[in-house]
Amino acid sequence: MINRRAFLVSAALVAGCRPALSIPRGGRDLGPDPPPRPRDGRLRRKAEQFESAMEHHLTPEGLVLTERLIDPDPEDPLNAQDAAIWTGCYVAAEACRWLVTRDSGARARLDRSLRGLHLLQDATGVPGALARMVKRAPAPVPGEKPAWRQGVGGMAAYRWMGDVSVDQYAGVFFGYAAAHEAVEDATTRAAIADRVGRLVDRLIDHTWRIVDADGQPTKHSDLSGGLLTEPLNALLALAFAKVAARVTGEPRFAEAYRVLAARGYARTAAAARDKWWEYLFGVNHSDNNLAYLGYYPLIRLETEPDLLDRYRAGVSRAWRVVRVEGNPLFAFITQASEAPGWRDDEALARAIDTLARFPFPKRDEIVRNSLRRGICRSWFDDRLGHPQACAPLPVDERPRSSFEWSSNPYRMDRAGDPRVALAGVDYLLAYWLGRRHGILSDAD
Image 1 (cartoon, rainbow, N blue to C red):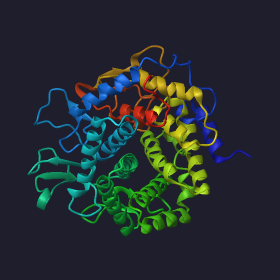
Image 2: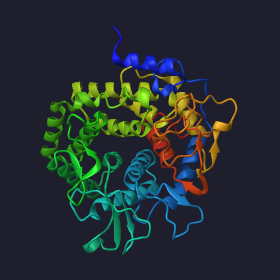
Image 3: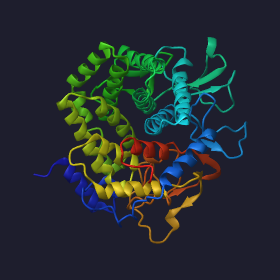
Image 4: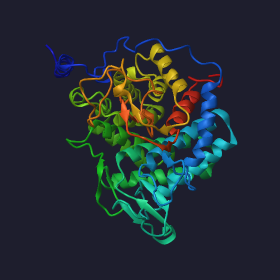
């Protein structure tokens, strides 16, 4: 008997040329073999270039601005509303770099951006309430969205943006977990434990919903495990509770984690990706990234065999969806998780080739792949209505992205602005996580 998922996949296949990502076949469908693995240090040198360029993308507090004007106009600031997630990812990259190299520059960047993560809570004036972004400004700035608010008391010189989403939490916890593992001094660890404890206490107090400083739930906030709660959010709630239990050592967080797992969160988390409706309506690539940000600390911290098996099965399921993409972050996390059946040399070679092709510098260039001959265009647009290719395009041929690993690798066009420089947090995170787990070496 055919099940619902198989029927929907078949219907999509009959309907037309659906991108391979939405039809995870598990076969040898990666296209031509990539060139031999680079052994001339080019990946390391590119990481050094991106590290140097990052200074232009960091605020004085260490928060990450993924976009900046090459010739900045102070009257025309770029959108900086997602600093929390990308700063967390940058903290994780520098934590891995510090563990691998013990380089003083890595530790300085790590400490600086950790202070940025702390500021995202401190600026709100409410324990456990998180901001999306904080900036130095004593008064409202023209063009701000309503979610921007003025700090009070010692934070009166700052403005902060509310309406924080689960995406921002995922990046923050990912960064805090990596930093806590990397550092050894008690002061830094205590500061991490304090901020993480406040975040999870507030989630528990509001029945696992993200509540803004004004007491209202944010737009994307439901981690409660209700009927309409996304399995992805169940995964992230488990990750947040597990990280809090580890970094604080507080029994109440271990108990909160146990209760969530017993309520079915652990079973649900294994289905965080590979959604049946995405076969028809398009894949949410950002959610793929969030799932991997959640699985990584959860699997590294879990010691109970049955739960660990469930989470590894979830990674295997997620990997079937993204295997064809040549995504190094996903490939490296999948390998580090020791998920069942993982030994995918072909996909791993493709992922390393993506790093070799990764463009430096990153500019928001105008790209029109839909006008090129020889590129198969899918009959289906992506979930946002944009044209996409039948197979993932090489990373150096795609439109540039603020964070490549959360973007659609089938995307074709972008009406970009070459005056805009993009940060390399995506490259740095994938590269240093690969170094952290011995998948890459200094010679690559």
